[in-house]
Image (cartoon, rainbow, N blue to C red; front, side, top):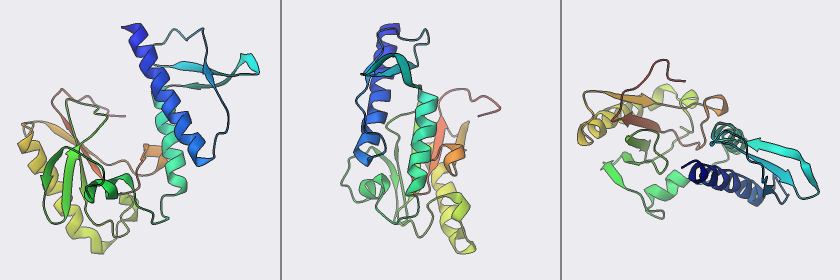
Length: 192
């Protein structure tokens, strides 16, 4: 089990670094350290020329924070996001609910037994909740109502959480406003 977790951590961290390499932010070849840390959720990386010195220590938390900071750099450039591609059906997803203004689909990296993302089909400047204006009031209400419909469809209406990550400090990684509907297990407080 621990070996599988370390392999997953290595894959997650490698994917993170590979994604950065394609954006030109990191241009280095790394290899996993033969001496993995005692924590099954982290892995140490070494540069080929400095086999005893750590280049970085990546863990899921570190990866999320770094990915959020990287995503924030291009947050308002108007380029299509992965969510725009899901809306256009260019990328497959498991749709839970859809109407003319809202789309809800299962998260590919669920953090609870039920984890559904609810997004507006038209961004209209809503890259994050902090960019909301009075004119967005209707769509914001529709997103919350869609979250309730999703909870009912998924059988978690008796207990669910709605989360909106706003900006890099909240680990927002896609700059297309979205709600996370989480449930199917006991939620804890405080959440963060």
